[in-house]
Length: 181
Ligand code: 5GP
Image 1 (cartoon, rainbow, N blue to C red):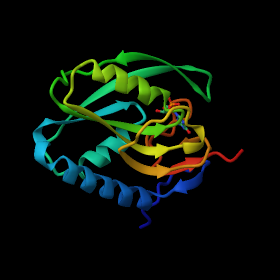
Image 2: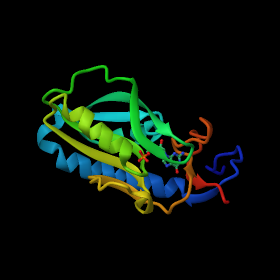
Image 3: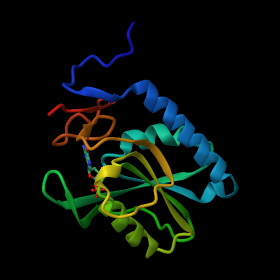
Image 4: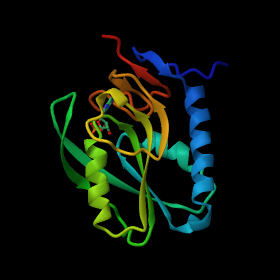
């Protein structure tokens, strides 16, 4: 029996399910090694909703007793570009004071959302804040964001699947695709 997803999303494949699995396992091993000493104080913060599929796979490749929390944000701008004006729609459930925070994002595009998150989380006095993103579009960067753990750099295309949506749909597609213009 084929392991391919059966419903037919109209996308070209950019990153296959197999490539995603392999890279996520590598990231999990790297994070496990880097946070070995402080394991219990590591908090993974998933940025809703795009990161949930990546986070659920990644956390199972991290061999530490870490905890998890979520933050929901709305970014204002037009359909294709965030303005950097971000509102928290759902805040963390727990304090991160003294914790080692790893922000888990689906994609860093302009970098404005990540910049806001770094500033906002820093006010809560965590021990450290690092960033892990599945994807990065280097051609779109507006600010220099340091991505501590990166899955894949992608070209300047609107990507979808594996958590990323088009008008809230297709997050359940099990590969990263793009719509051909
Ligand atoms: P930034 O603030 O870095 O410009 O935007 C980050 C957010 O924009 C991501 O978390 C994601 O929700 C959305 N985004 C940016 N590029 C894409 C894309 O190619 N596809 C989808 N589905 N969302 C994107």
